[in-house]
Length: 292
Image (cartoon, rainbow, N blue to C red):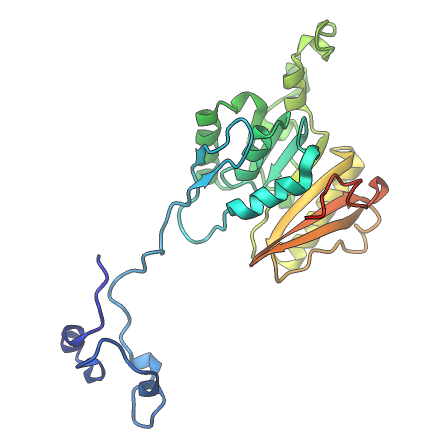
């Protein structure tokens, strides 16, 4: 429905004399003695234009540069902006090329697809929302990236980082023949397929809901510790956690022995925290991060 001004006709229809003869109420109308309070002012009879939208996202760089991605509908999600995404991958620099990536709480896959476009070997996408997974699969099919991707409906807070079984794959599915003479991959499996089956993640994106509780955040730290102990992440891995800028992401005492914060960047209402293993060294140079 098109927007309607709060003018005399609206006032005549609603019966509020306050609006007769002018387009909008004055500030003193609400605070002068005898005047109506805010609770008495009629609400607009038309929906806000931004109440429902389809957020169009795009690939910033790489082989699929400029391609549009399908995004979520509604105002309950906060897709990463182009500016933040571009800065994120500039900071990561060479750590993306040939990386084995886990995109957790991936939504429709903006970060993981960007990594694939920039040369990542494979990405495991983990998301619990079925509608987001449907859009993610459509994005991957449209870009021809299904052979380097694994998509799983997976609760990271409850189960941790996705493994081979979580993505619907089994080690037994690998051929039992000898190594491939060209790629050196075991079982004659092409090298790209070995990457796709690998869970030795060198780069992990965490994008949990902004409203995540402190208890849930501690649980996520615990899952990172489990992944480090199980060898699910590479000893030189980088974890990128996107969160509300008003919230500080710090490892609890139990996790501080394994993980530490390497860098923080704030972009308006959202922030990026870069997490590295304690044994990996913490300088920006060692993290492959620039000082932008």
